Length: 144
Ligand SMILES: [Zn+2]
Ligand SMILES: [Zn+2]
Image (cartoon, rainbow, N blue to C red; front, side):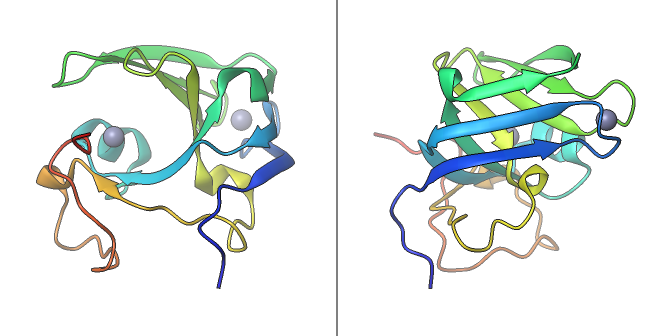
């Protein structure tokens, strides 16, 4: 079993067409699933699987396009994607400006270390999208 410690990454990933390269070097800050409507729309699936990294630990090579979405919470999310193949590259939220959210699926074989610890925005989670019943769920963000 993978441990629940936050892994230290040193890896390079590419979008589906290869024009955008993403380098992650540093310790993962958080790993979670998000079932908000914006993530469902942007990913085409039931939830996003996010890896949160410090902004300085992520380097993008190439020219992603981006757009802003205002979330129900009032926060603004800027989503970057490859303008050629459409692969989501990363997202930034005004709620956590020092973090970058990277889609786990972009990072290749993450089985050894990707251990999401919560499902956020469970209020819009869809029943056909199966998620481990053991995963803590929060209606919106985890209340601290
Ligand atoms: Zn691409
Ligand atoms: Zn979301």
